Image (cartoon, rainbow, N blue to C red; front, side):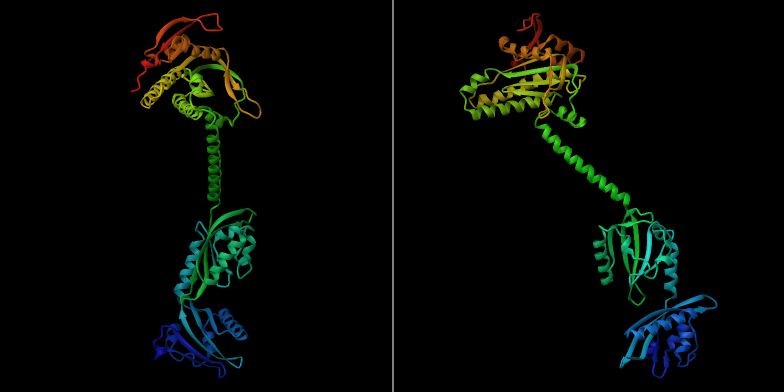
Length: 478
């Protein structure tokens, strides 16, 4: 009853008597009438294709010699109308005193499975990935056209254990690849990994390899279906991205270091030129000098810690004004500062930006004085002088120290104009040249409040220079 109710055909082979029992379901699967095989195992084997009969016999012979407890073998049966039928036989072998005495097995029709497998093989040739099939003993049994073309080999060259894939893996990637693969093979589990594999021309290519565990219709592990996707371009892109990120990080660190010593526009020029600003050239620029009034006398009666804090606050105001108006902070000299506009390269509104910077600086100082007065401190006063014209610009430092600055008559004249702010008791002094340049730049708004002071004598210069002045009180803090 059990034999009749089983989905598989069952058989029991007594090796000592060479007699076999075949269940009714087995006859149904084979398409034979009941009893057609009598009790002969030879008749069953003879119903298979001749080549497969020999192979099945060899399989049993090997199992017996190696004292195998289980067996599994596939064979084809010719069908006049529909071609081949695929059958799988599996079961147990019983031994007595080291001799096989009985084989108990089942038979199942796996034709549909085999046809589907063959269809997959046919379709896989057109797949854009490298596909292969590995058996449970790690032997290649199938590879699509792309796979064989990649390695420049034929299936006959590679199948049935004739391909040692470990020799085509990059030596640096082999240890981890072997570990992942053979662990998956041992555990009958799928696995994914990335490694380099050698193409037929000797070039190593990066691949993403997926090995999907496959199983027979009875649930036995049958090996892997492998898919290799060439990801070399992606790997190169990732490598380039990492390299660029490293370069950007390095550039950011360089920029941060330079920003501690140079103004933003000078930092950008240094970064653009790779730090090469050695070429000396003459160009039009605007120069600004600013200095706190009576700072030396005030420092003599003020604790040094407070003096340092005051200078830090003053330098912060200067940097906000200069950098906020596209200027270059050239140098600090105690409580004095020199800034240039139009460096490292001339712009369309250099004089206008310089005057705007002077107004910005005085406005910030007025706001600071409000705080100081609230705290019972005396207000600070500042003098700012501006002049423009041709100057020589370049690196005047040594091989060990970078010192980029401007030199020329207009620099000296701007400094002397700033000195006059004390004599004339005024916050900002600009030359006629500045006024004319601002008008040319259509920046007249920054001249609001400036009064003409006429021609003034400048120490060290025979020719008088026309100046314009603006008081601190004329600049609103709101």
